[in-house]
Amino acid sequence: MNSKVIIQMDSKKTRICNPKATTDNSPDAHKDFTFDHSYWSFDPSSPQFASQEQVFNDLGMDVVDAAFEGYNACVFAYGQTGSGKTFTMMGSKATTDNSPDAHKDFTFDHSYWSFDPSSPQFASQEQVFNDLGMDVVDAAFEGYNACVFAYGQTGSGKTFTMMGSKDCAFMYCVGKKLWGRKGLCMFHCGGDRLKEGAHINKSLVTLGSVISSLAELSTKKSTFIPYRDSVLTWLLKDSLGGNSKTIMIAAISPADVNYSETLSTLRYANRAKNIINKPTVNEDPNTRIIRELHDEITKLKAMLTS
Ligand SMILES: Nc1ncnc2c1ncn2[C@@H]1O[C@H](COP(=O)(O)OP(=O)(O)OP(=O)(O)O)[C@@H](O)[C@H]1O
Image (cartoon, rainbow, N blue to C red; front, side, top):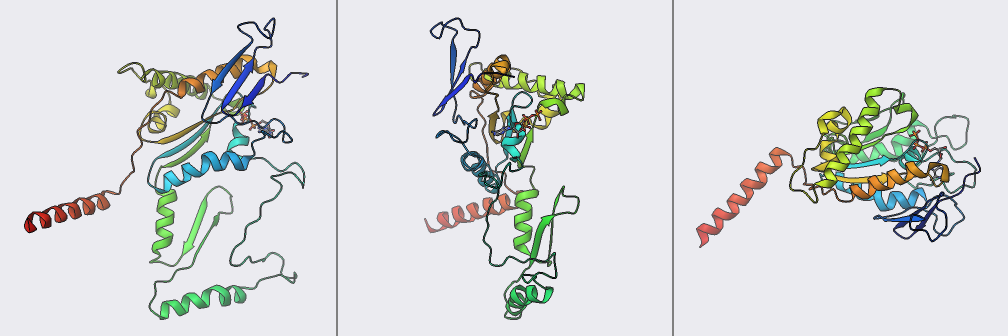
């Protein structure tokens, strides 16, 4: 579209230049916004270039840790269609074999190759059992708790599934932490696909109003937050303005043709900085009772000694 780049980033600062400004020095020539992070991903050869890995390390890791600690955690991406919300959340197919995201290496105790039985690398069931199962069986005979579990995607590719021995505390614990909570919630909104339903558009308008009203709370004592005006905001009530560690990613286009949408996204993100959430660890009710009884016993023992 022969468009020009109108976004500049410097450390945490994002600058948007007005393509219609008469001169570079006119008062409306540019606007600056400061965020926790400003990620430049326009040109991979630029020294400022932020990779998917950097974004994940800066933002994603904390969210996963928080979910493990028992907090509600949420990452949401906001921005006009095509601005990179899906790319930021999910990555994309590698463009070349040499691109930075073309492959990832992982090292495990064993890596078993089993699609092709004619390959010299082929691992039989017997080999897998000898490598892994024997130790587990021996350990069980020696009186240890022992467990084998498998974790992966179902055939449909939509959900994750696990198989394992019963009495497997570890599997239960990992499963419960990751999937037993509504805690870790990732979604993205916006775009043509979402425009298919009028009610979804309404959700996006309401999301904007909710962000504005929540931001007003920093200056006003109380204000009405229209969570109930859409299903999206109702479901995300806790994540947006309550008990959740929430990260908002504002995805923007660097092109001059998108100036007004980009400016509006930056203004929303800037307003959202004023939203204060108060996340608390979600505690299992039984664990809480045990902790409270423990505290009481300690107090009573102290009273007895004194
Ligand atoms: N940081 C980036 N680096 C390289 N390519 C990107 C980047 N962000 C987005 N893209 C590319 O731009 C296109 C649009 O991005 P994406 O699909 O993520 O937008 P979106 O905001 O999710 O759009 P929609 O709201 O329509 O779903 C895709 O082809 C994507 O691969």
